[in-house]
Every structure is written in structure tokens, then in C-alpha cells.
Length: 455
Image (cartoon, rainbow, N blue to C red; front, top):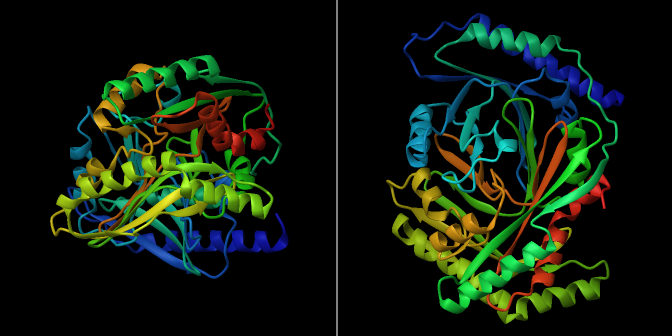
């Protein structure tokens, strides 16, 4: 860390001490209160969050950077957690909003939901559960050019908050920056199984049972040494500028990381933003060839049909929840580092009573990560895929009393002390070719294979 970085980290510790002192004068709320309190102070310099987080005591950690780069949050510790019990996802989210009622606007619960919260739970996802959202004890936040450090507490519990702030201030652990390498990669399914699965999907299309299904691949890599996930993530995030970056580490152990291009929805009061993202071509280094690929994507009837399925699904599922709903007339090409997609943005004014739980139920799973009809596609995936997706392709993000920002957890990987699991999927429609679809999941996984230098 350079001199400038050391100065900003010192200023961050100074802010934490100021929060600790604020808590000394705070009068405890009644013990039966569910009130969320937030104390914050401004800091002048921008800390390097991906360098600061691994230097904190081992606890729940998170990193969230909006794709514009204008909002960024690092979180440490847990002030409160809301988890799914059983399979009642809607009730879990409603309980979360009840907890947030009247809370400070910037008090946000971060977390996610499994792609199929009623499906099998893979053992590598044990620390995440079917759904979990937590209020970080401490956050360092960027909003435009303003930086804030904040501490949160529930029920006036100043003792726990002060004790954890003290541990954070006094911790002297250093981040590891050693390179991470791995052995051979194992794909599930392998190419033969992948081909068989696509042929089964094509048969289901011919029978009229399905119009589209998204099949996923899990690539497992054994790591030669425990990784510093934040140092591991930094070069990936540097290369994926116009995506939403996330690291979710709910218990300080296994971490879910990624740079997702797909927003499920963003809500500010009654204004809703969402989008359709489906149809894919690779990128090319040569600008003329890259433009030719984009033109090919726009003119491909197969890709346009796949995209239209997603657009129509959004219209059909959101209409009952909105006073108004509009979208772009034609899709545009959204260019990412390794691939480019057809993209159609939506904007809506929600009905007065529409909740985030209803929006999540309406929009997830999207045809871009599941298929159509949704239930038939989900059943096909349950029968076909031999692994649990966990939070891959599920909704992740944050929820506050007045707003929410939920993205689809694609372009992602799960990292433990001994393994990395990279996930990628491809939309299968009539006319899909198994080899071309395998090449697509290879391209989508490429950032992780480059990161760890495996072949």
C-alpha cells in the first residue's frame, strides 16, 4: 500500500473512532424495540476498499459496486440477519421490510436468494442458505463523490456495536497478495453430457413443452493454497467496468464473487427500472470485426426471437403491478469485455401497494436464466442439472425502506479455501447447436479461467 493509500486507511480508522465515541453518548432504546439506528460520519479521502476488507477481523464481509461506479459499499460484521425458514420466500422478504419500516434511508440489508430456493442445496453453498439478507455492522460507502463510514445497531445494542468497532479499529491483520493457482478443471456437465442435455431440450421444443431453457455449467477447480478473495477479485473488477461488482461472504469463509451485467430491478420509491438481456455474440479485438459481430447479433432471427421471449415475459408479468410500463422500441447491443448482448431497458411507475416481494416473485427467475414457460423450464433444469446452482443466477443485492437494487448473479464464481466453482449458462432455443452453446459458456467463464491461469 502506498503513502496515499495508507493515509486514507488511517482516515478511515479515524472515522471509526469517531463512531465509537458517538455511541458512548447514545441512550439505549427499549429492549423490546426493533428500531434500526445508524450513525455516520464523512471522510474526505477515498479508501481502497478491496485492500481494507481483507485486513478486517474474520467476519461477514461484502463489497458492492454499482455498474456506474457512482455507488460503492464495503460492509463488515452483522448487526442483524433475516433468513429464509422453510420455503416461504415472500414471507421472508415481507419480514425484512417490516424490520426496515421507519429505518434510516441508507440502512441497507445486503444478500441474496438461491436460483431455486425450493430445489436441492449443494454442500458448497451451506453458509449461504436458500435466502439471507444482513445489515452490516459497519459500512464504508461512496455516493457520487461523497464518502461515509457508518455503524448500524438494532434494539439500541450499543455494547455489541462498540465492542466490534473496537476490534475493527485495533485489528492489525495484513492482506495476502500471493498469486493463486489451481490444478485441472472439472466441468459438470462435460461436453458429452452437455450435448445430450441440449438434444433433450430440442426434443421438448418439438413436443411443444418448452420454448426456451437455460442450461448451466459448473466448473470446479482445486486451489493449491487458500486465496485472498479480495486480491483475487481486484484484477477481475478492473477489467469489467460496466458491470455490477459483488463479493458476498456471509460468514467470513466461502465467498460468492462476480461482475454481473444484468439488473433484475432497481426501485426508488415508486419508480422501477428493469431490463431484458438475452442474445449473445463474442467480442473481437478488431473494431470492424467487432462491429460485424454486433450487426450479426441484431440481424439474427434466432437471437431476436430469444430476446423477444424475455421482453414479452417482462411485459406480461409486470403489467398487473404497474400504473405505467414502457420500454425501448428496439433492442440495442450492450457490449461487455468478452461478450455482447441484445439489451432492452424498461421503466415503470409501480402501483401504490406493490412490494419488493411481489416484484421478485414476478420477475425471478427471468427467461434469460431459466427459460419459458418458467415452471416447465425450471422442472427441466431440476431433472437435467446434476448440481445445485445455489445463488448463481439468483437475485442478489440490497433492500432499504425506500429503495432496492437487485441484480441477477451471473458471471460469477464461488470461492472457498480449497476450491473455486465458476458458473455459466446458455439459453437453448429451437435451432441451438451444442458446440456453439458450449463455446458460449466458455466465453462467459473466461474471466475466471484467466484469473486463475487454469487450462
